[in-house]
Image (cartoon, rainbow, N blue to C red):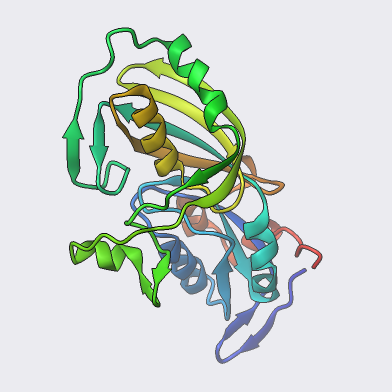
Length: 241
């Protein structure tokens, strides 16, 4: 799993490291931190998380980068907080507020749970403008920063399971088990529109990716104190292609 041939470009180390990403770090921040902390030759990841999100980030070391497609193809599990009554241009708390609306007077936990089957199974999502998808080679978020909005084609995704965890209006907590490419913030937006008051994603934590769990992940703070040998013991074997 691990090969330790020191070269000028860095340590050649192969494996999969599960990291519990802290809030306000980009996925690239975590990649760079691990690469520099252990002076590694090659580090990648198996699917990004937005800076506001926390949770499971699958880091791919050395030959592990060849497993990227396999890791990203696995289903994902998220726990998210949706704030009802406010929509934003990014569909999450990082965006500019577009509109605020009162909650429906008949809003109840039961009424929201009754809507969840409509968002379960094979559905279509219109990707948000503030996303990494590209139009003519330019990421949509860069166009959004220029004040531009372009038409986006609906994309098929699969929501395998959608469960309401917490009920504290205007905030509701949901667990989402979904396919690759699902935008949980778009799910929050679309559910809010169905309820009739709008919504945005106010917190997000990824707890699973494929057969990997955040319960097996190591924190950035722990890695700061962890020597190379101990970190190597935390590596998972490469996935078979």
